[in-house]
Image 1: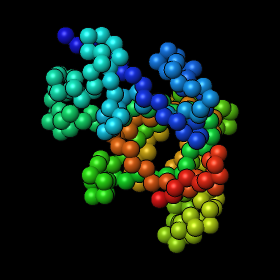
Image 2: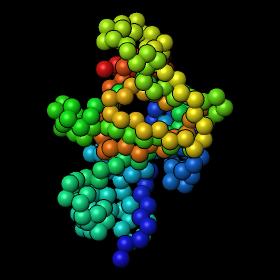
Image 3: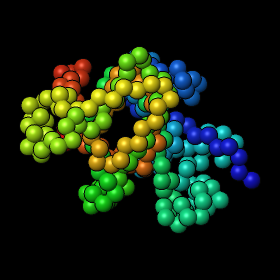
Length: 219
């Protein structure tokens, strides 16, 4: 008989991360260096190379794929098992946004399949906590912006000027369909529930550089 299954968090260093994940995850991340910036905790993942591993009960040490293979529809539902097989269709993350995330956009299913043999990346955000006057960036100020105006903003590093800022508060939920230009801003702790995909097209990174003076790749 199955039981409430827990998984080991997979912690990711990010240039925009902070220390909140270390505090929230406690013993599960006690071996991590406290001198680094951690932006993401992948709490349930079927992404290749980052598949979740059970942390409790008699299934401890088994991967998510392994327990789906054994329990199939009993674990994920018959229809889901028929559609996705051993690949769990959702990726669940906890994000500590100690700085702004890059402005980015994700492909839909058809483009992701064509270019990456992958699912697309539609996602939803739940705001766990935020600083006063926090915001997200969602789409453009001008819904009639032209392709040429967008390309010029990218080339000139002025994408921030054309983005729509949306105020947020604790408990807010946002649905972000694939193809929507977006960014999370500083001072947010967010749970992300998304399709199983790690494909991101980064179009602007606020003109920042890392500790070695290098900018991150833009797509």
